[in-house]
Image (cartoon, rainbow, N blue to C red; front, side):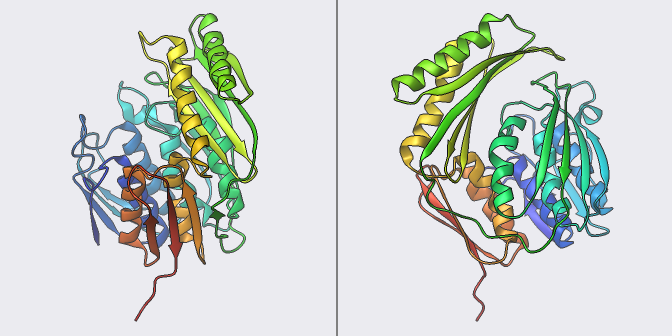
Length: 353
């Protein structure tokens, strides 16, 4: 059994999710200790516990330590990942607390189910647009199109938005069966910028808020020489929430940039923060944004051949995710570049003496 130190590097929930996914795919039992040890609320939170139980459900795993707040978990797969129809609801684990991210639950089971020969269908309920997690809009427009380049076909339908902390969102996911080896990905050049577009969304808030966010985003980008289509969107749902979701679409890849509203933070400042992230990425001339980079680590590590991906910023999250993958796989995974700077991720066959 592998023992994984959950406090390594970035020390967040990504260590748990990557370990669960690779344990399910490889059949390697794992024990994750010191889960989120350095966080304000250490141990398993609702979204982590839901991910644990989802991973266990798809491969009949035996669990020890699957409780809210637990800082140690033993995960022993009982079978290969089993395609099928599954429903997972973060609210069931929340026990009255805030709704965690459905995107992070999906992140845990997507690749294991994609290894199966048959299609899987998922219904996931909880937060669709929450801080510190990829928004469902990002998964749809950035992550999944890149996976399609590797032969991994997934579709998401956003049925209901759910902002933090109330949640109440729902997505439907269709994961196609695997038809052959996954392709390598070579994203070193991004090509020309085709368009910039996005949404300024607000739930259960006055109409002027999404309008102000959209107008400011368009103006900031226009000042930088980029004409963008950013549309305001009013939503009704379980609780208030707001955010700006921007996308920069190049010839070969799309980047996504998100900022959420906070009480007391003017709508214009929310828009400006998202624009700053987009412009910083655009000026780097790198194809892959920092958030997509760490989400591609597993698929790159599991594809035969050599993959190379250039990112606009090497994050601690990325370095930690690579470290976890190395614990399970014999593939050579490396980074060319320094933390906080542009760099290249390389995944290829390990050399054996």
